Length: 151
Length: 151
DNA sequence: TACTTATTGAGAATAATCCTTATTAAGGGA
DNA sequence: TCCCTTAATAAGGATTATTCTCAATAAGTA
Image 1 (tube, chains in turn red, purple, brown, green):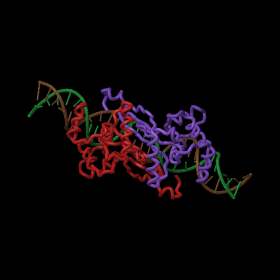
Image 2: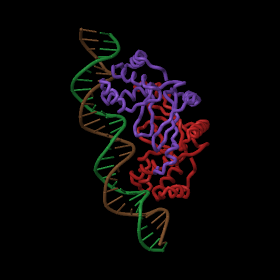
Image 3: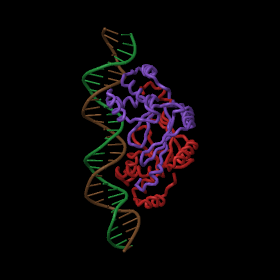
Image 4: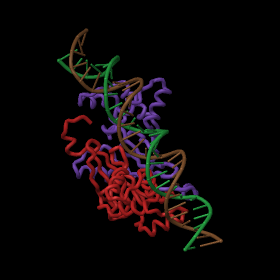
């Protein structure tokens, strides 16, 4: 859950025999400049880059998102929409969690520092190296509770 | 997060104009009899039922799993294997969470009552009706930390 | 018992993600 | 600085989980 720059990303990649490419640098920057609370799907990112005139292929996007999630740079979010979303992985006080309505997918972010502490302690106890820790609350929002629509 | 019997499931379904079918009853029983900590994917369940000589179509399985998750009977787990897993949703002291190795998918369950409390409080504060609350820790297990295999 | 309509089963359709392959280019060493 | 090795990219095809469609069936209710 470190804060990455192009330089530190390059260092960490090279250490493992991997390479820093313009594509990886671009994608890191996109996520770093995303306003807090925003997150992108693979296709969102693809379209965003197309619009910016610096297209990157979908294959590369998928590979890079997975790579960065496994390095702990990005968080992989499952927000009940049938595809994954990604956001930069930051420590407290930016670290947050999600409350999701399973009917309309409305999502609220909330912060609670004790969650990350619990996650850190649990991973440590088992000898795991922590990448990310998230609490997901599945619920029904006030509007959908009132609605008579099925499920 | 209530404990369901065929009777209470029927009552809750009928209340909404829905029906209790033998398929739904069977699937509920399968999950209720699953040893604690076990979870099934849609295909696991399909194969299990085939093996028991009481086959249920894949369509029905997918529909039922989603229905029961949205009723709060089942928990939908995203355990990093590319498809969802389901388990019965139980209150404390059975309620638990998952620590997952993103490389080998090894998963450890852990309990921590304060997590469910936090989830309950957060949902309540926003007026949401809680269905499930889970903490997911993505990490690298000791074995994979030692291995030199990529990502 | 009959009627309405929710539910099932079967297979087709969809959508997200991954894989394959030729081509390109990053990083390390001479 | 220039090579050389090989990781990474782009493009499109392949895969796989999940959803949809529709005719047939059966649960719940009057």
